[in-house]
Structure formats: structure tokens, C-alpha cells
Length: 241
Image (cartoon, rainbow, N blue to C red):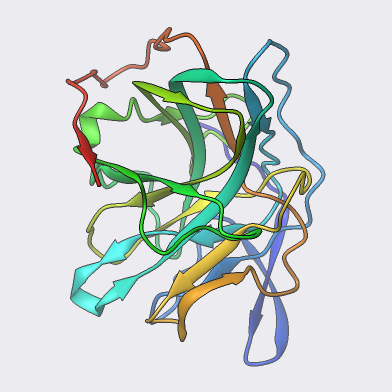
């Protein structure tokens, strides 16, 4: 197993501190893992929408850590140019802050939101509460082959053309480590949004500076699960609001 040796930057008490991704651990959970960007994935196929992951870009906490009363959520927008049915959603994420190479297996809370003026509505119109083995967790092609993972889920979601928002939040897990959504190579429509009472942002806000990119995610109108070792697909669990 190999690790990427590129250096990321964390802001700690006003100081810029270089660290190697996946090896550091703070005493408490953090909002972000900063990255310099410049390592976009090479995904070349027709999809409904993609925010292309950049594996050197920032990572933002989107998770539940019950022991710390931590709840954070990241949502980014996507646009459908015509009426379409989403049959597969893919998202990318990174472990950090004490990660030792073993994923949590915690599962995910996936949420879809209506647009409320370049930010999501407060309440999702659709939510999936998924156990870990439903998300086909696997090391991301093009990532560091240690802490950066890709996830996918097949569903059947017909939507009218327009702008929507999607969030992927890791379900309750132990700390360390942390998990966050991997940044994308650019912002395409609206800035991604963040909320977390733990970090003093109880309502949706554009991700604070110095975040520069979007959030990686992809939507397709066909469901072709990617084979991943030690993963399985479960039944769809949709909770309509």
C-alpha cells in the first residue's frame, strides 16, 4: 500500500502548519482539511451532472459524531437541463484527523433539497438513511489509495428540470477519525453550503473562505454498480418527506 506524499496545510491557532494527510490527529474534531488543489480526477463519460473531484482539494466535515454532539452537513447544487430520472449517485470523501487506514463502516444519510435561492431549503424533500454496506465504499481511483474513498448508491428519483441540492453525511461514528466530503475542481453554479451547530453555523451558509472549489458528486440516469471488494448492495430505503 502506498501513500501520496503531497503536503496539505492546516490553520492551527493562526499558524500555517504542513501535515501529511491521514497521519495527524487533533484533540477535537475540526471543520476542514485544507489542500492546495490541482489533482482532478479523469472521468470521461456521459452523465447527468458531475462536480469533478480534485484529490488535492479541501475536505469539509459532513458527519455525525454523537459522543461529541457533533452534527455537520455539506450540500452542493446540481442542475438538470431536462426532466430526468436519477438512477445512480456517486460522491467522494476523505478520512482525516486520526485515520489509521480502517474505514468506519458507519453508513450515510443522503438528502436531496429544493433550491431556495442559491442555498438549500431547511428540510430535504427526500432522505435515504443507509447502512455502510449499501454505499459500496471503495478506494477512489486517482486518490491516495489510503484515505480517499468513493461511494455510490442506486435509486429511482424522477425530477423536473431545474436546480437541486444534494448532501452526503456520514452517519454516527467514533472519533477519531473524521470524514468529510472531497472538494471538486471548480464551482459551477452556487457556492457549496455548510451548516453545523457544533461549529457555530446552525443555518446554511456558503462555505467560509478560504474554500475555493465545489464539492465532488455525480448523477447518472443508469444504474451500473461498480464492483468493489468487501462491499455489497442492499435494498433502497427511501423516506419521503
